[in-house]
Structure formats: C-alpha cells, structure tokens
Image 1 (cartoon, one colour):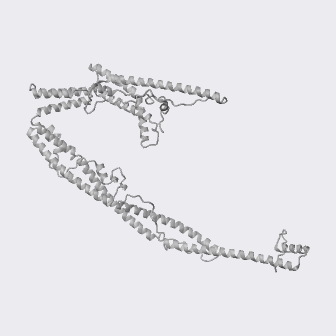
Image 2 (spheres, rainbow, N blue to C red):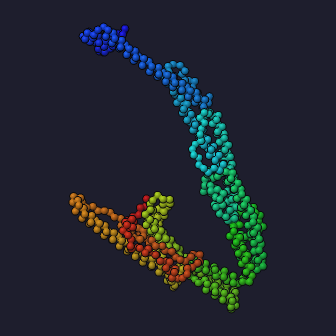
Image 3 (spheres, rainbow, N blue to C red):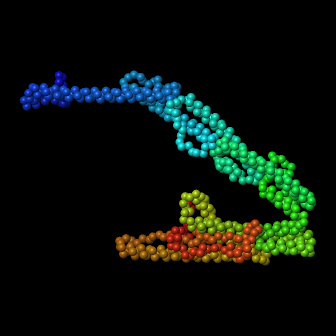
Amino acid sequence: MTVMDAQNPLLGETTCGTLLQKLQEIWDEVGESDEERDKMLLQIEQECLDVYKRKVEQAAKSRAELLLTLSDAKLELSTLVAALGDKSFLGVDTVKASGTIKEQLAAIAPALEQLWKQKEERVKEFSDVQSQIQKICGEIAGSTSEQTGAPAVDESDLSLKKLNEYQTKLQELQKEKSDRLHKVLDFVGTVHDLCAVLGVDFFSTITEVHPSLDEATCVQSKNISNDTLLRLAKTVSDLNEDKKQRLRKLQELATKLIDLWNLMDTPGDERRLFNHVTCNISASVDEVTVPSALALDLIEQAEVEVERLDQLKSSRMKELAFKRQVELEEIFAHAHIEVNPEAAREKIMALIDSGNVEPAELLADRDNQIAKAKEEAISRKEILDRVEKWMSACEEESWLDDYNRDDNRYNASRGAHLNLKRAEKARILVNKIPGMADTLVAKTRAWEENHGITFKYDGVPLLAMLDEYAMLRQEREEEKRRLRDQKKFGEQQNTEQEAGFSSRSTPTRSAGTKKVVGPRANGGANGTPSRRLSPSANQNGSRSAGKDGKRDSMRLAAPANFVAISKEDAASHVSGTDPIPASP
C-alpha cells in the first residue's frame, strides 16, 4: 500500500499503520525475504480493493432500490390523485421534487398516507351508497335472495363527481321506494277495510299476497315489487266484487224479512234484532263500511231467520214457548243449575198438542220461571264467581306441578321466560287456595242456611266437592311428608355406609356427608295438587251424560304411579319443602 496510516496517538488505538508496522517487525524477526514481503503486501491490497468493491456494489443496489421505491411512490401518488379527482387533495403540490432520494421519500410518505386514508374513506362512501342502491333495486325487483356481500367499488374513479352521481341515483330510488310503499300501504288499508266489512280474516288474506304485508311487520320491510302491487290490486278487485254480491244477497234477504214481518205483524222488538240487516236495504256498495256488515255468518243468520219466519206462520205459538225455554236454559246454564231440557220441551209440546192450556197462560208461566231463575242466579252469583276463581287457581296449581316436574324448565328454550313468569304468579295464586276454599265453604253454608237447600254446581253438591278436594290435598301432604322421611332415612343410611367404607379403606380420612336431592311429592312447593280439577259442565249450557260422570270429572285424578317413584326420578326433583328458584 502506498499510503500508510500512522499510529493513532489517542488511547493507543490499532490502525492499519500500526498493524503494518507490527507485521514488518515480525518479518524482520523471522527474516522474511523482500519478495515474500511484496507478495504479501499485494495480497493485502487486493483484499482491500475487493472489500471496497463489495461495499460500492451494495450501495449502488440500495440506491437502485430506493429509486424504484421513489418511482413507485410517485406513480402511486399520481394514481391516487387521479382516482380521487384533481381537487380532492391539495397537498400534492407541496411534495419535494429535489434533494436526496431519502429526503424525497420522506417528503412523499405523509402525502401518500393522507391520500390512502382519504381513499379508504371515499371507498367506504361509495360502498355505502352502492349497497343502498343494490338493496332498493332488489326490493323493487322483488328479489328475496340475500346479498352475498358488499358491491365491488371501482377504485379507478373515486371522484366526488362520480359519488354525486351515485347519490343522485340513490335519491331517485329512495323516492320510488317511498312512492311504492305508499301504494302498498294504501292497498293494504283498502284490503283491511274490505275484510272488516266482509268478516274475512285480514291476516290470511294479506299474507297470501306476500308474508311481509302483515301488520306486525315493520313498514320498511314490506315488499314493494311490481308483482306484489299487481297481486294487491287483484285482491282489492276480488274483494270489491265479493262485496257487491254479498250486498245484493243481503238486500234480497232484508226485503223478504220485511215482507214476512208485515205479514205476521211482528212486533218492533223482534224486528230490531235484525236492524243490522235491514239498515242496508237501500245502501250502495260504497256506503257499507260497518265491520262485519256483510259477513257470511250474518247472511246465513238472515237466511235462517227467513226460513224460521216461513215456518213460524204455522207454529208461532210453539216458537215463542221454546224461545222462552231456551232463555230459561241459558240462565240455568250460566248459574250452573242442572236441568233436564228434554223433559221441559216434551212437557211444552204435550201441553200445546193437548189444547188444554191457553197460549197466554203458557207464556206467562215461562216468564214467571224465567224471573225466578234470574233471581236465583243473582243469589248464586257471588258464590259462582268464587268457584270460578278457585277452579282457575286449581288449574294453575296443576300446571305448576307439571312445570316443577319438568327437568328442562330452566333451559334457555323459546318461551321459557314466559313460563317462569307464569310459575311465579302461579305460586302466589296457589298459596291463596286454602283461604279461597275456606271462604267458599263459609259462603256456601250461609247460602244453604238462608235458602234451605243444598248448593249444587252442575248437579254436584259444592260442599262435597270442597270436602273431597281438602281430603285429597291432605292425603297428598301426608304422602309428601312420608317421602321426605323416606329421603332422610335413605340419606342417613348412605352416610353410615360411606362412613363405614371410609373407616375401612382410608382410616385417616374423615367421613363426610353427601347431599342427596330427595324425591318431591307429587305437587308444588306449597302442596298444591298436580291433578287437574275441571268441571264437566259446559258454561254455554251443554251438559255431560250423567250426574256420576260429572262427579268423577270433578275429582283430582292422581297418577297411578304416585307412590312408586323410582329413586332416579326422585333424585331428579327438588324436595317439596325446598324453595323453588325464581330464575334459571
């Protein structure tokens, strides 16, 4: 080497000069020849040149990569500016176009970052607008298939001009959707009014057109396609035609009714029963707007009345007598008084056929019986109301028992929270049953003392029903106590067995107690019966076959395997004395 570094005077650092001097000292000591020395020095110089070349090549490669990165950045910058529009980014002009490569990259990086951020925001705006356009177009087309994803955005043109075009299109589609929605709602309202007048089920009618037209569906979710609008228009047309035909039929029946009334000099009270029929005798189609004014059952009722009046011409007296008998039977039915309607009707027919009774006397006798029946029904009303509340509480008691026996009652199934709320209310109501029964017994005995007869409910003595219920309830309480004692005895035996086994196998381990969930009595926590109390008498006046059948139906039917509860089933229920959790 032609240039030799001198020894660094600072801190005795090792330099190329000091190393060369050390090498020469070694050569002198060894006695190396000048030829070998020159050869070694040339070799050292060549190695130094190789190192410099590698460093220069690496620097050149790094510069080329930086230049490529700078070129790509400038290209990306110009592409973003072009996509976002000429005036969408004002900071492009401030980017340095001179200086070192790294200085240019450092200057362009913030601009690129800002442009990328602006591009992402613009892409999001385009995607939102295009998604809304796609959704509304699908609603107008009546497409029921769900969109697989957001629409593809053309990132080559993200200018505000293009965005405004999409927004304008979206506004037009929103207006069209609003107009269609108003048409649909108008049609639905017309269908609702026509169904009300015709007595037709609006829900089934409108859902046949499209399920989304139900009143429970959100307004914005209703179908607005061309097919739905056409089907709605056809439905309205069909209902209007049906309305015309029914009105024509009703007006014909009203004319016949008036003719028959005039013929038989029917009193005004009976005529007023069919004012809803005769009031539309001269009405036009558009004037009939009262709900159920043209219902099929109303037309059938008018037809039946016309037929009845035709027969009434020859059997007027029988009809009046049987009419009062029906009224009497209805009073008895609502008062839960057992009667024999067939025998009463046969007696009326026999009196009429014999001709030994005047029609006025027969009708007066019917009116007297009706007045007495009403008085008796009024005197029984308070007790009957309490009986209904008591039976309703027993029904809830039976339901609560079934609910408590359901191992899956706390699962997060559909409607479980509703059953839980009902169970909470049922427990409160069931706790009141004993008091309700005691009050009912007192009221019934007081009534029987005042009237001197037994209070019967559909032919069954009410006190007997209450006594039977109290007896069955007491039996079940005893059964529950027996099961609890049996459970305690079983737990004690299990504890003793475990203690003995533990003392034999591991003497150092103390015997512990294992909590076993005991069997639950056949009922709820408060001892209410799980057997349903349901009177067989129909509240609308119908009766069961016989008195014994009614008495049997009033009993609380215990399950056949009430006592023979398996150990596994018993362990799956909580004890009748344990509190029932209020929530899962």
